[in-house]
Length: 242
Image (tube, rainbow, N blue to C red; front, side, top):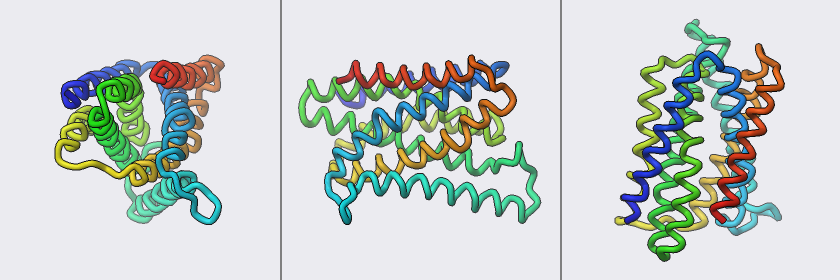
């Protein structure tokens, strides 16, 4: 049952990527919407879930929050190292950005989507009602995942072929994750820690890269409205699922 439900996430991920692929003449709007979706996913879904699932505190601070900060710093470190390596080798740059950063970010999205599938499978192990609720949330926000995976890959100068390849991997990931729960179960604290780490990395990419790029050449109110719309959409999804 969980694998069949995860096929819905597969289709929604492809739909999100296809939307990002088609809207090429309004790149600033696409980036503004992507930034809003990423901020919404981090603040309204990933971080609250990480704080609840990770549970324990480390020296007075929730483990999920520590990993959130760690994920932010890790993303910053990876970007700086890749940019330095690219400059040292004289590689061709795209707007001063290393294509490897986009691939790394997209790979993180694929890992997150796989964990979405694991969440669906684990929820169905608890009960049908729980599984259905989790599935609604995952399938709804996988549109944003597909949108962001394609956008993150392309914004760093990667070829369209690579972006489509990462999109396909992101679409398949939740199905594979759901199928894996037939073999093992993931401890809740580990899942919470992963969500916190991923949320920090995603926030860095949204705040330090995607949104500044969206407003660099087109500081229009329409771009800002797209960002707000992205956050509101995730809020609607989270509220509906609960």
